[in-house]
Structures are given as structure tokens and as C-alpha cells.
Image (tube, rainbow, N blue to C red):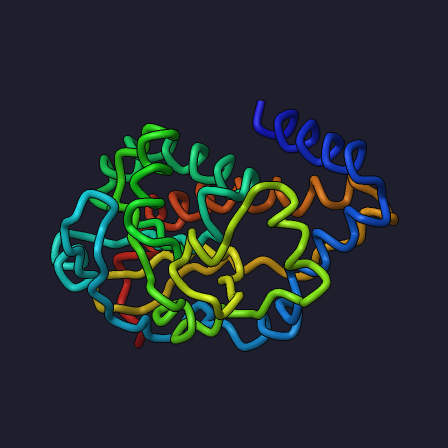
Length: 234
């Protein structure tokens, strides 16, 4: 089950590096994310329009997808992030239902297309996985934060070269977030990750945060099923 996979991965990190270093890894990667979260776009606001390259080399436009039906857009850090991969697999499991409701699904990260392709193939994803160079789109959604200096060494210690993955040395990532956008371009559902507790408090709290992220896909589908994504603001 997803919750067991999340729990096992979190426990393994704490076991490998210890509680103190786990806090450096988790909290440092967040950087200013807790402050940025308050500036993220929310339900009721208009989504920025975008056109981005996909993992397969195609160019995907939100406008074209909205012409067909509502769109679920999810931002993730990258294929190097195990929590993101768990969430992407959870979204993949919801894809048949999303399509049956007339919707489509788009995942976006700052990784270069080759890295996005690796993620697509590794997880057998059947939806659009797009590359947002320098987090340009994520910045318009108010999701971008900078990784702290203390945490930069930890991804490298785990074999994650974010500069190579993202094709940029800006050391920025998007907050993980999921939106549903209706055909008028209005955000009718948002799930933006809030504050992440310290490992020293309890890794059970961290698991709860991650489970909420994996449930976001189901909640997004629910918003389409109930017709929210097809409504137009008064």
C-alpha cells in the first residue's frame, strides 16, 4: 500500500542518516517553502496559460488540453525524489477515471526533458510529463523556493546532482502542488503542501504529510466527478 511505502522510505532515511541529518535534509530542502506556500495560487484564481516541452519531445499547451476538458496539473520536484515518484504512481492509477470523466493530467517539474523521459519510463506513466525550465511556470503559480545552503550537500551525498537534473545552477524547486483547472481557465481545486514537521518530532507526522499528497489526486478526481471543474465563476 502507498502508506506503507511512504512509511518504509521515511524510516529508512532516518535510519541511514540519523534524526539530526534527516532534519537537515528535509527542512533544508524546504528552505523558504513554508513562506512561499502562502503566496501560491489558490482555488478561484485564474491559471496562467502555458506551453511546455514534454518528455517525448512534443510541445503541450494548456489551451489545447482545456479545449477538450478540465485539466489536473501537478507540480513535483523531480524523478530523483522518491516521495514524488510515489505520488506520480498514485496519479497514474487514477488516470483511467480521469479520462472517463473527460479530463486530462499533466505533471510538471524543473527537470530537463531527458530526465523527465527517464521518470516517465521508470514509472510507466501514460500522461504528459513536462519540463519547466528554470521553474518559469512554477514561479507564476507562486510555488518556487530556494534550497538552503546546508541541504545542498545532502542531495549530492545521495547521488542527486540537481544542477544536472534541472540544467540550472539556481538551486530552486517547486513546492509540490496539485490543481484542477476548468475549461474557462479557472482553478477550481488546489492542494498545496503546507509546513513539513521535523523528523525529530515524529516521522509519523511526516508520513501524514506525504499521504495527503498522494490523496490529492483522488480529491482532484472527486472535484471533476462532482462537476466543479465544469462550472464557471459567477
